[in-house]
Length: 348
Image (cartoon, rainbow, N blue to C red; front, side):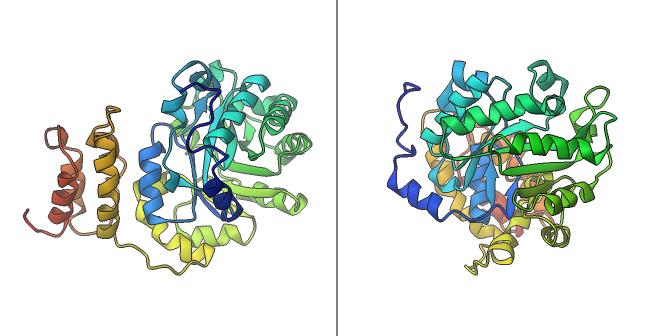
């Protein structure tokens, strides 16, 4: 497909316009996680929660503009509400990608100003951009001028040894002046040298009170909090202070946590699917993906659902079968059914 063409699931679709008009607030969202929140995980997550906002893994502007755009932008209609997270620091490139995000039908485009990895820093984007708030503002303005969907920013509260609140407040003020009204704040500093991305998620202390203060001082902005949040009780506490909560690895490793989200945070009392029903609902998708001719194998999907039965007796059998390379080789949806039966001690 030519990049200048509007995809079949693009913004001109009336069904998508209806979807956007009815899209839920960002009270709950799943964080963008590199190599994890791909389209297979997002489809699976949507089977558990109808309203939770989902984010793509970070995609660089270069990958979209000079690579296989279809590979990076394709998604299933069921994934809405859905945001594309971009990595980049060139306003013109980000603007082109924001326009493509709109054409493809995304509900939001998010700029990554929080990733601390040295590989990302070499590309001059991610958390290191917090040191250049005006550049971030220029990027946001270019993106907003290029598209009509929400442009948001995900960032940290500081970088390296800069730990005073005024730093993050100044960053937010500068970027907000360019028209950004939604900020997703990971409540830790990013240490740009000496810590791995994993260590950056664990070692810098959490300062949730910085995020609360941002909301108190900037009530006109939508402020979402991220970092170390694992339980519904913690989520409730944060929502007393700010507009939304973004959950990361807990939503991946323990995805059935999301089963309570719709009723608890969106007032939607539809029947909550059981874990077994989630597996049943996933089967047509697996069948479709394996037969689509794009090289998808069951392992590409199965790796995202290993945590579905976490805390349930028999969960170990589920994980074992769906991570066994010999079983996964050339397997189809029947392996999911066999693994589900094994959870309950049944034989198929």
